[in-house]
Amino acid sequence: MSLAGGGLWAALAGPSAPPVTVLGKPGGAEPGVAMVGLDKYRSAEAPKPMPPLSFLDGEGRRVDVSEFKDKLVLLNLWATWCAPCVKEMPALDRLQAQLGGEGFQVVALSVDRGGKDQVQPFYQKIGVSNLGLYLDPSSSSMQALSLRGLPTTLLVDQEGRELGRIEGAVEWDSPEVVAFLRKHMGRGSGPARDTRGGVLKTGG
Image (cartoon, rainbow, N blue to C red; front, top):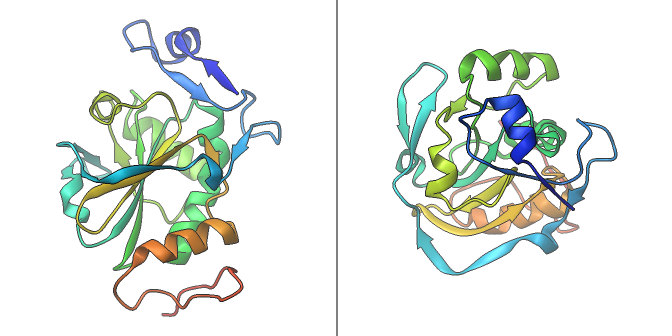
């Protein structure tokens, strides 16, 4: 279910913000928010290079998406006012704790206009401790990546190419999703694979 978000965006982000669609049912982080599964993942016909894309980190440094080359990257675009985004954020945080390292990274890119002052307190409020702060207060990434709404998550391979994307909130640390991501991690030592498709913590 999609919710046309022009009015919502205008109310929460200001009259100058572009229209956007919130993917999933409204209602904050309540159970009623719709979740989607891997059946909604749309694979690219062939891996395609990412467009030029840069954003800010929590220290105000300009970061280019190419800096994550050699890792499988889950690039999640979200906002604090987007109910499905809020719903999936704890699972993204747990996923980064489980798989994050030399071979994998979750890059949760906020398009909140308030930038760090808006996102950092939100992270603290919901207990996010493993995700880095990545900020795009101009929302230019949405146009660059041809997004139709939030949340949208891109899977980017170790060569910096988009493998596919999924629209809507996902239970990112579910056994099904973790097994799917491990298959795409491809090279490096990575975490051991559970032959039953279950979740294994990385060694340290």
